[in-house]
Image 1: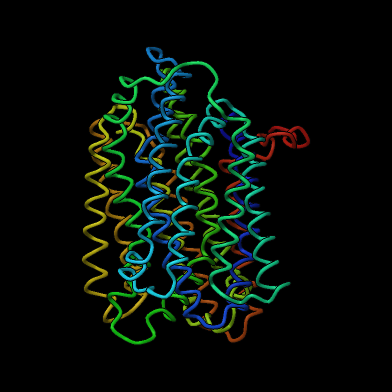
Image 2: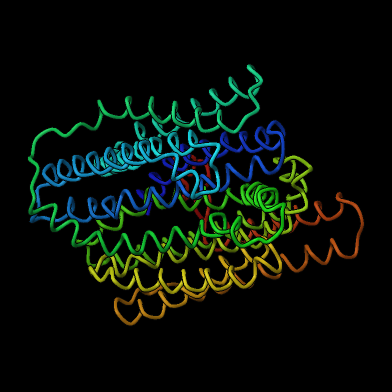
Length: 479
């Protein structure tokens, strides 16, 4: 657990600091771009980018960790095979889309912006290829290089956005995508010297085994990412009114306010996935998985409470033109909590090589998401979008838990998890009561601060003594 905490801290610094710096782009876009509909275009195309990234990596990242940690496979051969396979498929994708950019732009309702499609295609192709080199850095336990390269992209992306949108005054969506492709290209060039394959050889048989393992994860990944992005992809087609892009811009901007939860989930995942596969050789690893789940939930609730209690401050991340959508933030936060729990639960079918279960869960979630959005978006707009994601992840989280406990039981500390869940709900009820019975912002925020301190004190006393912290724990005496 100390190793997991250390890696989470390093990966978390790059992820959280990087995402926090990217937060600066949200107010930049919402204040500088001409209209909320402009940010709607950004939201829509980046949703497509996320979906394409999953398709173009087709589960090979997880497959790499799986086969590189197996005793009967040569890790160098596994890496070289995955490296050149993704390089080939990503290049073919980029060339194809650039050549067909005009008809694709027409199908996506952007006939006058074919250049957006070309820039997006090349960017996502480079990102897809880079997933294996970045996975190699994690596998070879080089988190500092990983973190530095991730932060390099963020700094470059912000720098180019400031140059184009602020210094040069180019308040056009085109420069958002141009900034992204420039930053991605430089990051990729800096990544290659650390990750070019050395030793081993390309093996068709290894590729066949990896694809057999990974392709079910493609179904899982596509369905899973569609559960996350389908709301922003389908919204312009389902919302029947003329301000569809403007409403999507408001929804997308307010969704970003809750992204601090996603930052934590992502940082935890970067450390957790290689940790799990390497610890699978240890028969006592189930206790470690149970501890990881408990602490993930505990700190997720802490973040959820902090964002909700201080939402009156977080709202300034976006322009006042977007504030009408801030009511969705608590719903999005709970969605991220369920999504993170589902991710942690998913390791039972990855470790038992029964990845088909993940595909089934994702398809069930996709069906729920699709039905709720088709029925709800024309009636209640983006409330149906965020509500469908909440219901989706809650259902598949429960399905994964109950089936996983039957297939590969892990002794999760349900008593502690239940305690912190009840505590979180009680603190939220007290906060909303304070908002209901008082006026202004000062008293509710003061009440929220007290409630957050109560949660932290209980956490430290019950499950996280300060003496156990890395580096600074020695300054706190053990009881």
